[in-house]
Structure formats: C-alpha cells, structure tokens
Image (cartoon, rainbow, N blue to C red):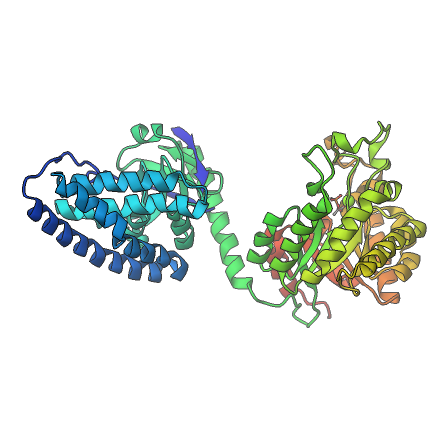
Length: 543
Ligand code: PEP
Ligand code: MG
C-alpha cells in the first residue's frame, strides 16, 4: 500500500482501477521539412480538423459540465484562429521547420509569455494555448484524441491533463482524476468540479512510477490523498466513508429547498454557524436559511495588529451581500480566554475563562469596539444584518454596549454615512446569570441566541477545554434545559425571538424538546443543516 498527498479538487471519495494516460503527441521529433507549401496545407487541414473536434467537445462540455465550463472551449476556438499565433507558426514553416515542430515551439513560446503575466486570468491561458497546440499536433500526426479507455470506475493518472483531455473522457466510466501537476483553479480542476468527479492535482511526479494500469486505488478528493493498492482494512474504512458521503449527499438533495416544518405545521428557522467568509458557500450549499452566528474573532487572530475598519467592512460586506436578503447574525469580538493574540496585550489571568474576554474586553477598550461597530453598521446596507454581543452577564453591560452603538450611529449620521437604522441588536445567552435575568435583558434587545457551549461550561463549572471533564459536563443536564426553557419564555413574554447557536442545536435527540420549548431558530455547522431539517420534518408535536 502506498500513499501520496496532493491538492483535493472535488470533495468525494472514489475507489477504482488505475488507468495511466500515455501522451505521445507532445513528442515532435520531426524538425525540418523541405516542402513549405505542403507543410502549410497539412497545417490547414489539421487546424480544420482540430476546430471540428473542439466544436464537438464544446457540445459535450455543455451537456456534461454546464455553460460556464463549456466556455473554456469557446476560448480555445478563438485562440486557434488567433492571428499572431497563426502568423508565428507560418513564419517558422517558412524558415523550413516542419508543421508539427512549428506548432509545438509556437505553443511553448506563447504559453511562456502567458505564464509570466501578472493577471491570473491571462496566466491561465498558458494551459489553453498548450492544449490547442497539442490538439493540432495530434491531428497532424493522425493520432486519436478521443480516449478509448475500457472498463469502468477508472482512476485516470497523468502527468498533467489539459481541459480538452479532461472533457474527452466518457464521464460514465471515470471515477477520478489524479495529476502530478496543476493548480486548484486551473480549468481542468474547474471541469472536474463541475462534472462532480473527485480529483487530486499537484501530487508530484513520483506517483506515476508507483502506479500501473489495473491497480486498485482510492482517491479522497476532500483530503487530497491517493492510496495505491490499499490493504483490506483501509479499503473497508474508505468504503464506509464513501457510503456515508453518498448518504449525506442524498440527504442534501432530498431536503434541499424544503421547509423546516413539523408534520403538524410548526415552523423553525435553521441557520448556519460560520467562522470566516469562505464558509458562506457551505451555508448556501447546505441550504441554510441564514447565518445564525458569524464568529467575527477570526478577523483578529493570527495577526500582529488590530484589523482596520476598512478590512472589517470588506469582510462583512462580502458575507452580507453573498447571503442576499437572508439574515446574518454577526457576533462582535469574542476574544480572550482560549482565543488570543499577543498584540491584544491581555494581562495574565489566573482564570482566563472567567476573565477579561468578549464584551468585557470591548467595554474596557471602547475604541476597538467602536471600530468594529462602525464597520458593521456601514456594512448593514449591504444585506440583512443583526449584531450580537457575546458573554453578557448583566443588564448594565447590555445598556453600555448599546450606548456605544448609539454613539457610532450618531457619528455616522453626522457624516451622512448610510446604515440600516433597523439593524437588530441581540445578545448571546451563555452565562447562567444572563439566563436567570433573561426576563430583564429581553426588554433591552431584539433577540437572544443561546450559546450552549459556554452556558454548559459556566453552569456545570466544567472547563470546556479540559478533556478529563467530559464525563462530568453533562450537556443534557436538566439545569441547562431549564435555563434554555426560561430564556425562551422570557424572550416570548417580551415579544422577541430566541435561537440556539451552541453545539447542542445540532443534537437531533433534543430537536423535539427545543421545538416544544418554542425555540425559533437553531444555528448549526453548515453540514448539519439538512440533518436537523430532516429531523424537524419527522416530528409531530401534538398528540
Ligand atoms: C457558545 O458558547 O455556545 C458559542 C456558540 O460560542 P463559542 O463556541 O464561540 O464560544
Ligand atoms: Mg461562547
């Protein structure tokens, strides 16, 4: 058993038989030719043949991979007729070189020019010009360009794959692609993704000498791992992982677009928790109704100074506009305790989890808080924003945080900077104190989101970072459920909505209980959205 690691392009597992792609047509040993006119007419014939092939590939790409992917071949059709490219080939033939050699050398030199360009789009054209040149050379040599691999579940292993080679395979026979070179944003990678075929690229040249036709192999497009001739145990484990993935994907398809509604008609919102803007695509992929918790602290971590207002504004703007009119709850800075950076200069604390963290740090350093709030309010016009404060434990803290919000809003008004005046302001209920005084807190905010991770830690006095305490930290502890129940009652008595965004929200053994309590929203890791929806749709609350 041998393992290789590259870059995964499409996250799925494939188990199949290796088929090594042999490329002969890049070999252009025929250098010189005496009959210049003969070479020109050979070139024209080959070019026309290549154009006809590209038109066919365009149609195939349209059917198998969609319009966006098919456009790649539109570009090829344009490039093959490019005047500069054609003149360069003809000039070389006029100098006495063979058509094959002239095309190969021109292709190489154009590709080198594209590769050296600053613009990423132009750099990508290098692969295209190589691709069309190879196609013309194949036509000149009378080589087949269609792949005729026999068998199914083929794992195509190659040094590199051009977009048109990728498209020339019969999709129904291909299980995966693995290439020694390539980049995740190359057209080949994009095509593999749009065809839904797992692929690993940039795995390094060595793998080609380790694989041979017919070897059993496993491609994990998620982790980027290729296993050649796996042992029995690995095969079993990966088959199980593959089955679990297939099940999850069918759950996505079955539940996509459906309502989060119980058999007897109770509806709930199911939102997603995200930690950075890249996670938005997962939230949308799994059909979340909104973002219930955007942990904004990632913007502050792994750096050496505070993020500027502009940096933050750009991130919030991006998330809000990608989510359109769906609600996005952004939690203000929740840093300190286990999440910190040197530049924050938080004094050493005996009990950091009970220390200067989250809203306390923001109230102690209002300038940091104001910068974030300014960025947030400015971004509020780009979507449906709600702002949420973490770790509230008293009414005074909430009033003080809101006072700073008002100050920021006044400053924006003075400068005529637009913001959404109806932006909801909510709080996390994650300290027992907040849950106990939730009836009072509800009078000062627009929503609650229960952070069961910290609520459990503080209620049970079990450090959430300490693995030895797992057996003591009973997340289904009656104490926590009572606090959740009381918080929900306080919210509804005061006409505000209440959600749960801690890990407990995804525990489907509690979904029915949460619905009975009257929780309005559950916010979970994106990949759990459909699992929770599935559960909700199977629940009957009455009778
Ligand atoms: C929580 O405490 O439940 C929560 C959602 O916040 P975090 O896990 O980021 O502390
Ligand atoms: Mg928390």
